[in-house]
Image 1 (spheres, rainbow, N blue to C red):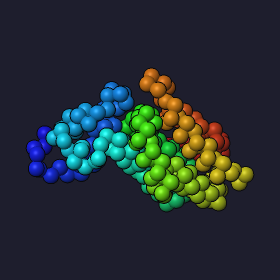
Image 2: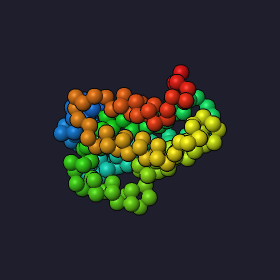
Image 3: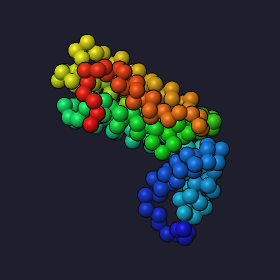
Length: 200
């Protein structure tokens, strides 16, 4: 445990990762400031040193994970022509479901102040589902131009279906429900069609 007055490196990510573990293991109701700092192995007041409170912490965690996925989606353009289309798309979409993503999204919805902070940040230009969708559509357009996606495919409609479904699964997933990642893989395969090479 880090003693008071000692700088904790990468403290935000350390606290975010601890929160993900708590939510994934014990559910959203178990997330408290103390649970996060205990899981992170740091001083109990550290979360409140860096965040105004638990609502701000939750909002920043959700926004950080959106931004992480948006960065991965933006990198898709550099993968056009490499690997498989389905494999590349899976890698981006499944980041949303990593480390308790569904539970974290549900957590934000149960905390109105956190949800409001997330909405305001997205309205101000923070990367969210729109940015991810735009990157996916751009990538699919590039793959269609290379002949790796059917010429009749509509990249924007496919991107909307993929990202919209991911959003739905994140918002409605419950403990004990089937793994949403398997459903996303089936959707991607169905949308891309049999002409796309199988994943390695």
